[in-house]
Length: 277
Image (cartoon, rainbow, N blue to C red):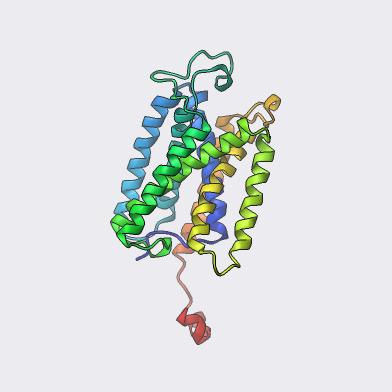
């Protein structure tokens, strides 16, 4: 029984929706509710563990279980990245705040150092995955060990993607819209490379998976940040509520499609070559 979804256009739409919500929801807890990066990271990581246990214990693919884990990795990745890269300096505080909540204010490593650490961790995960001999094709991952490696890579890649998105928005000079357009351009290049036989689709998938996270980060910042900083100033609470409703609707649609009973007459009319595939 398959445990993970097929990679289709709908998959990427839901991925972008989940990562954008992860950005706004992570900022909602850490900044708007003033819990700070430290406490929020611990709380969201525990939520990730709970959702992951539910996913791992499931005997087959369930869209609600799968996308809840994606969302929890996106939220945890947002605050993990912020805690690694930021500190309590004025550029990261808003509304005259003097701190980021209880506990350490942030490690202040900066985006380049934080990204280098996350890339190194991600490479170690992929190396361990390769040495294990298990497939990188997500539709064929059905074992507990394979899923554990997959979700470890997802958590780190979402954290890395957050760092990339924040760098594009805050430090590159491109702004939220410019950063999003750059990522969209890179994703278009990946789509074109799908037509090149020499480029493995598995490699393109993981690059796209990382890149859709900064797209969600810049989109989330564009929705929530003040107009003076180039955002729409819609607020983290309102933006998160709308994005959550959209994601739940997409998950419900995926759930209906997943449990739709195929018409056996359609199978009889399929060409032999198509059935073989």
